Length: 222
Image (tube, helix red, strand yellow):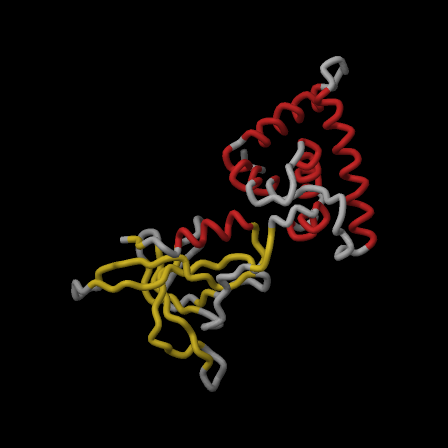
């Protein structure tokens, strides 16, 4: 489901919420109580539910049993309930961040991205391929612009984004550069080159993503 990737990051903590500010903790506590009430209704076969409540009960249980959720739940500090899933969805809809919700829930599903790199502050595109672009790591010149480093990377293209020679790529404020495996390609002189695959990934991520990045770093793409 389209909300699954959001849903997997939202659950309520019973302890360990002291790192959140009082207002956020209070609001998430109220939200979780509502979620618990709805979860109780879902489990009571004798209760008359509205159409909206019935639909959510079905969707919530499907999420709990989904393969993606089972993969993430392995990293959870405690079993995740239907009430947690409900809080996850409602919390995301109300704009709470994954990090705050995870802290509140006390599930310890997220942590600092251990693969963040700070070798280059930006990357300049010098060739556009069908699904990737080739870019060179930037060193700051005297003018503060992108200076040549001689280090090259392949970057997967994002759908709908324009790519062209000379484009400067940089991670957002809350992202960092991650080297996720290697890519082998043939240059115009028919010589093979193997370069790191570069991705911009959040600095704070869930443990399932960390595990997948680890797997990607062991792969070679041709």
